[in-house]
Length: 228
Image (cartoon, rainbow, N blue to C red; front, side, top):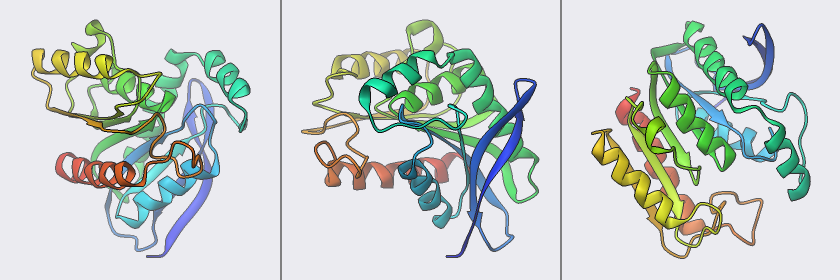
């Protein structure tokens, strides 16, 4: 499938935010999703994931929440993530969703959000703060606390690794219990023998191809069920 790929600027927080927009080059209507970066920034891996979604029939926008900064060093990534104001990031993500809604090629107008690591937590936060979001997927994203989980009104898919030392299995299970408590449509899947960042093939020491393939299939099915 041929794709249209471009860096854009969309209105956000009284200014603009850069983002990577990818869509099938067929001019047909497609559902829209927001791709939210890990703490490394808008790196080639995230752009590649956006392109993978576009080849599956989605219009994908990956906002650059660091506004041009990227890194491959964990210490620098930690500093960038800590400096990111969560409320501003959530506002930019929702502005990205509104931008997609404004495109004639995006239909229906329910927008999905998906993120990895830091981006997974931001996907959940955006879904909790903005009921207009159509569905949310978090790859090993920090679960919401009980108060924010109570705000959720959209279907949530959570994909976690059993061996994740940052987002512990107990936290994922507690999140599942809260989702059940509030009757939020959800699926929390915990992959055995999978570590944090099991989906990221650019990190071979933690990449788990079996878990990654299954999680990809689940993510596609989730968005096709709730956005199309």
